[in-house]
Image (cartoon, rainbow, N blue to C red):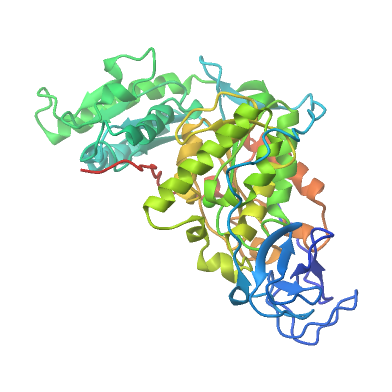
Length: 515
Ligand code: CA
């Protein structure tokens, strides 16, 4: 997709999001110097970098700093109008209490249906729809990964060219499987993640598992219903008398499945068959102004079209939970949201930290003072629909509509868990910039700023920075995102990561003990 970007304008410009806000963020590239006068009469008292906040009124010491109409912190020193509201001058508020939250008190009314949108997907026997046609080779333990790497290279070089209708062959490798407390209650998270990835819609139901033989996670546990042990090979099998024999068997099993996958055909599917996973990485102060609200608009369009759309990243919604529980479709779903927040609060507390450990040096350089401000921007991805369901980490999605899939915010762990949930398109917003990609699903990357979209024109699919400069509206970019999702899901357009073959490893979430 072409990235329309006008040359930067020198006219001073800031963005205030809510009438209650007493701060705004500077739009101009590279920031603005002391003495800069804005059309409204405000004068900067000092240099303020791009994306960072300026005080719009005199803010007294200990007074609330308000952005998104919410308290994002308290002034450590008096901040006269025109001051830079930098991190060292802001005290972070406590997170909202999980007791006494409103439960489904303001459930948004159902939005009008959006009919007639379709994409060309690979329909599976279980009703799910693939957006790519991939042979996935699952593994039960890390011990087999080196062997599988060698086999994979030969499969790609010698077999894949014979099957032009198959997009790729991927190895689902990980560090789980042995040396772990396999029966610990929390081990269900990595195990169900691997089980659900094995039946991902883009793998067409053609399961193949490479195992060692003696590991704690026995490969049968990864078999989806209806599959038998012919889908499993064990390197320790006594009939395999050499390394070469192991590679030959993996290649024969792969060849059988490639033949079947090659016969898959795309067919017209309603947009309601989409399962879109949304997340952000390398966020900045523009994330909550441009890219995430545009995703929120696209998310509402997807919900109106009957699709499933997931938002995630517990530590990035924790400080906005008081805005989310009222939007639940019923009290049960609101309680499930609280359950996932509580679980994560306890998990972090055991590690001696809290949700404030989330923010990175890059987030702060991009103007985000703390996790409260980051969370208010991150949760804008959820749009305005009712929250229809909640998933615990590693679960497969069951409902249509807007779903909160509880995951860590770590890009690779979140992506892996959304993959297990069954997402067939991934959409990722970034302000600082990351070349993140996954091989199993198309990953659409949306930039929050024009400067990033220009610098990384061959890595960014959609530029939402035009919202900050007034060249486009949230609705314009939201529709661009929605239409691009349909084209990418159909295989008609390729994402930048797919053009380059630029892929990160999967990363399991394992909160259970390792032995
Ligand atoms: Ca993330």
